[in-house]
Image (cartoon, rainbow, N blue to C red):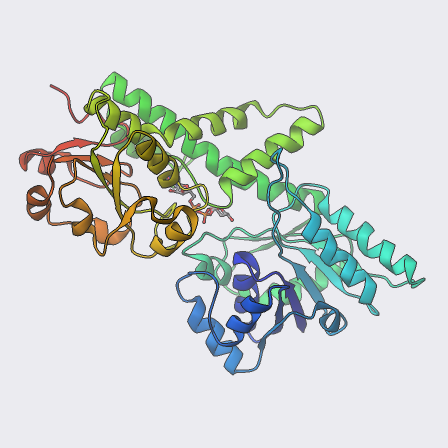
Length: 442
Ligand code: UDX
């Protein structure tokens, strides 16, 4: 089986590389010549644990290739995955320009049956638009070729994407014909050997499944953040409440950690897009609108605590920040709470000193040198008036508080991920604030 993956972003590159790992012949295509040149040299455009090694291994074995020439790959493929970007346009809906450009190129060159699969996160109805775009080009060429369109949403988590792809909870595929179902079942067989199902369904349901899954997860997070904020006011401890409810198997103990709001490339974009899709057909997603509003507020939570701790007198204060990426194991800062917090701090005239194990280059690219970058977590705390823990990287778990107490000018910690022990920090004379627990009770 030969496949082509169009788009070497996060989804495309992980998908292509993992398919090649099980012996499938894969070409990853991108219009960005520099990206492709780098990939040929083994330089990956993204940070994802295990990916570089897997790319190198499969390139060397001759089953993973990189190219900028989509037309020459079309007829060499049984399946073409479209995994190009769908950036949100001004009103929040996914911009399908790149997806449809690829579909047209396929239609302009296709001479045999191909299954065209949408892998990018696309609104319900996109596969139908892809079908129409391919068909239009075939009609222009007066060719009556039978082809298939399928929808195969991805559920990869950044930082754990390889594992998610190789051992998925489930694979969702929307198909329109038995032939496409048979081809997709064959393609995914190596990933289902330990009992993980491929769930076949119609195309719109597959497209909706992706949005419903992410919207549900985002809802869990915002719900817990709302409960956390109330816990704090009422004198309850959200960590206890989380354990108490999570042990009910109907609720489950995953994705109910309160924090400083969800970020990343998926949840914010998908929640917005689903709200928008519903609005355009005259239905209001009331819960998701609230999910979004709670999340926006939650990103300012630590900053608000910092303001009230210093009763608004924060001009000229130095703030240490630990963690810039939206979550550990990635350098991704898209929609990261750190960006919102840094913006608030700078607007208030604070000096910000940050450290992140891998995301500092990404931060420099995004916001430049408006903050200072430190070589380790300790350096960031020197002479600081406050420490903000924003990303729960393992290297922040057990810092030497005695050393930090001496380095900081003013010992106050704002923990956005509830990873520290309030009693221990109190005993060392720190002021400690987290999410959903009133740690500064008199
Ligand atoms: C998510 C989905 O998990 C994945 O299935 C989908 O394909 C893409 O979106 P990802 O964005 O990589 O993956 O990150 P994830 O690990 O799911 O975390 C998302 C955000 O939620 C992070 O900002 C994280 O800090 C936050 N989060 C997660 C919480 O605040 N609390 C939780 O309990 C879990």
